[in-house]
Image 1: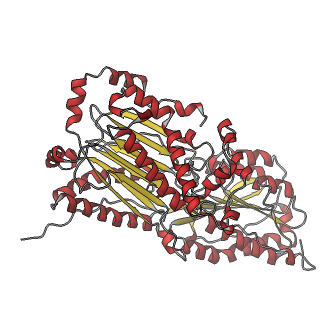
Image 2: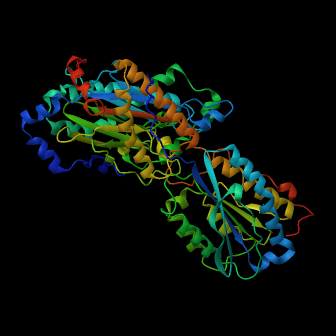
Image 3: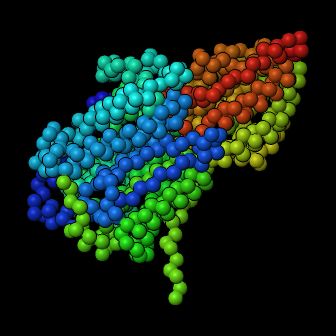
Length: 363
Length: 237
């Protein structure tokens, strides 16, 4: 992807214009009652467990708000990351954790709080077009910068050993990875350090006005509508094969981000499924993967109607999800697998929509 | 009162990731000299149990084996990918020219997507030759490298005997850091084929992610066997 392509819109002009001309009252009415449930789980890959010593989970996830006791919310941030786990990325478990933490904290402050927002302005005061421009032109760099600073701080606390320094790529290797003018300005040592923490990053932000999808590197985001039809906000990247991926550690990482902002109107997804590539690589075909994702809608509906408090239901779903992912890894790719699910509360359990009025509102 | 059954997890059709392994074998007339083709058949047959051992240690990779022979033209010796636990080697016979380029074009056809799925592990290609290509071998290499899976493949080349020209084999590998392996007698060939059918397979089986720039996937743990000790008075090729 060229530097200019990162600014290319993935939302059509007509879609923006539609939002711009949307009647305020209609938009408010449609979004007022929409609240979402969020569930997430992560497991160590079967092939990593077989190693001696076992390799720890290189994936990470972060959900905000941190704790809701299973109660539906109107605002969510869900971030997932897949640390590379290769010899040169020997700190990728830290790298993925830092990626989801810094991104989730920034995105929550930026889009889900009324006192802060892009460029210091409250997000509520910004037009959809202004938010769209910010997401396309500035957000990727902000996320990369946040992760890079977190890596730097972590490294100050935990310096590399001599042996670890030997594993790092040379400065020429990391700078040679990109001919972009921006990469030439970056500190070569910092770029080398970043490789040790290499990771992907993908996720979703949901507010009462829009859904923001973000993806850097491999992994899958799938939306399922209320009829069970699945589609991807981003098409599969045909260049990401043979375990090769773009990464936060690359010199021009920001230019590899894919960003899509969609307004909440009409028929938003019933389910948004975010997973690291260990899941889709476990399915014989992409159709099998999408069918499995779609089945989660029915499964959540059944779980919701099985009974228990909201907290008990949420805990049960996440426990069952973990067991499911271990099975998928064992019989599939052998890789670490992380899944985050955002589900429209009224579609998985109609009675839950009433919980929204008493749920914690964004600050 | 019956206790309600807890909702079942979503069923998933699951499968380990395919790892395609392709032998690309020179069956030209010179391979009949000094028992080279017999030694090649023996070495590949003897490598099968070792290859099965590696595959069983990596159950999340499904190792699928095929073979191509080239002489006057090129053809699949084993047309369909065979699971390693069902793989049996059928002897090759030699005679004719050395049309290596045609063999590589056949490989390139099979590395297109489809039939290759995007979830596959990097394919392992092992090229064995004892001479000088008689066709436009570079055309075959170009066709191979035009495919994304060709670029990502792990490519190993084994030169059989001292008359084997290294240039085409080096171009096939496409990495100046790694040279063709040299086998000058049957014992060295057995060792190299055993290595080529196990270590690269093990390395390619890992789900470890790489950040790269369309460079060939070179497993970090690649340690090429040293057969220098085999270059001695026992050399027959």
